[in-house]
Image 1 (cartoon, rainbow, N blue to C red):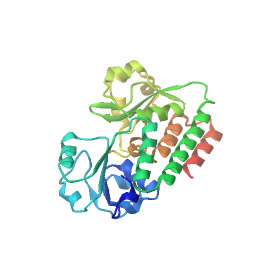
Image 2 (image 1 turned 135 degrees about the vertical axis):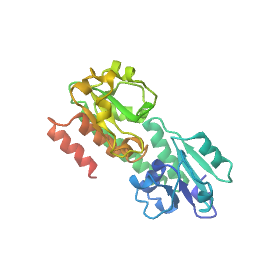
Image 3 (image 1 turned 45 degrees about the vertical axis):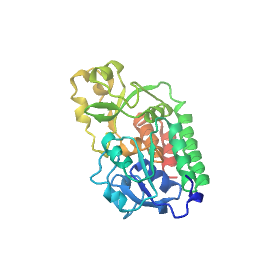
Image 4 (image 1 turned 45 degrees about the horizontal axis):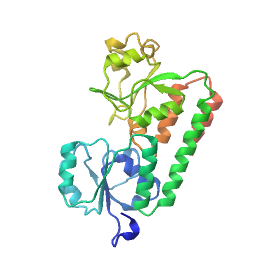
Length: 272
């Protein structure tokens, strides 16, 4: 599907904050006719109609009323919700990124669809350049910190694989597989130096006290040394431009003091 092949203007309903952030990031906001309530956390969606998402949808009719030429969804999906969408006469694009390479591919894909391929490539280059700058500074650190990032506490789910990549480029090591269910004992055995909570749909309201009260974790270095930190979930759980700020937030968690020059340079990236 390409914008140049369409006889009528694109009308996109985005059921994924990641897709919305990408479209706005490449200058294609005008193609959007509807978004989710979560999209306003990561993109300037203004007064666009707010709909459900791929996990929970009150009514498919609210999408049909917008007469979209394309509906975009991304992980996490709920089978029942997506099934209802697929029964409708809609063009549905499903994105399922796992790694940063997949995020870049999604940016290029959406750029091609909306006729903004050059802007998409520029966004990919910007992300790669700024991630590389963080990684270069991380190589100055003497030891890798062991990190457990959590996307959900019950059932306990580790942050997605792309977050594990961000942890690595920030000079850490994710101690459990990314994007998987884990149990208290697995985390305890991994002995993380730092625990990062970025609970989905919780903003910055994840509760460090909950981690500190886990019985199996009382001998974990992160708990003993009170190194449980919260990062706004949309900065780590949105596979798109918000990951730039997410990487900076991770850097600041892993390197809170003693690297004043490096921290100043990293903070400079955030202000670009």
